[in-house]
Length: 503
Image 1 (tube, helix red, strand yellow):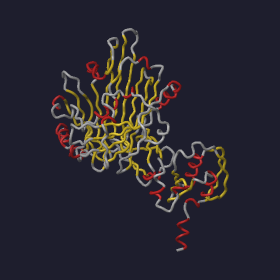
Image 2: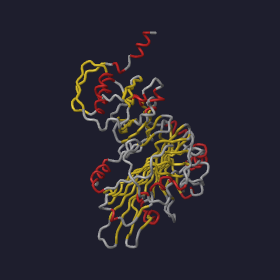
Image 3: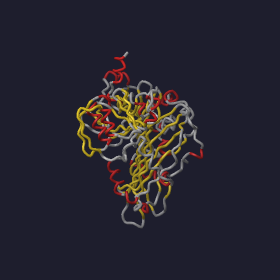
């Protein structure tokens, strides 16, 4: 019994280290110690923000004593659980189970990195990142970069990285350090025999996929938490950049007449105020467009059996996603139609015929006919010509059902004012990525709490919450966005909607 007690007390905190640090932050010191001792620190990121840099020299000293030198604050204690060390206030330090007492205090841990393909190291945009079997995840940005913030109770879970045409990569969260990680995905090839066996008529596949929506997608309402961002550029210079966290009441896929509801949780917005007076029109899009892109719920013409006769379909390839084979069906409108229609690709899993992704847009030679479809506000002196209209929608599989995961719209316009000699190019993009999903205790928001479908979100006025934005999952802006925000920092407005609510 005595031997067992002594063994139990011999934790990572008893490990002896020799260190030499000069003018280093507490965060950096803990990162360095984690590498040297093969341990992992978990703590509230706000604890040491205002602490001074430290100097430290130790020789063969126990880690517990070293931590007390680095963090002399007697209101904080250190808990060891295997290779994990949790720093918590003394009031949470008790003999109770660590997951019941300490974890609720811990806010979040951020995992970031870049996803690329092997062997050419090409970045993989919009790759799926998620905790295996859980409703938590995000997607990578256009440069393959991702950032996922998770709570400490997921420390024993596994992170899964997926991309169409590539094998999944899985990493235990407990093995991920505080440094950005590099994820390399290998191409996944389908054998010739499987291609021949599975080759089918694309139109028949689409009919079957639509008929199986009631089986493959949730039949009960769910609550989603989603990150949303929207931007407007003039001649490649950012005028507006907006990002928000949204609560979504997603209705059942069995009843297409019930409308989803979106409630603003937090938001912030940045204007280049020196350029706002050049906007002479408003563009449709935004949150309403993202929700409409849920093609399993709002069947577009290329999936609507009533309109499929207006398209040509072709089984272009069989690839893989999430370690499952998928059909890739290309479609385009038949020639000489009166109304412009979409052209693109649909991705369908071969085993259950679930629609997992679609990429589509209008043909460029028909875009001039669609001017009024995208303009909310304009004037007779301004001529607007669409140049690019492209969309992407993706779903994520959780417990044999497929959930709305990612929606993206990219639109570009040429704008000419009759009083001005030169025209301008305007671009707008909107993107939504689900970061969490709840099936139990689902809340249906009151209509007055929700965002009206016709709202131009960038016009909405609100106040900024500076304490919120360090703790939520987000999609990292591309580098040029970061530069743009820095460039206009002296003339920007930051706006956010709503107050943090207890759920």
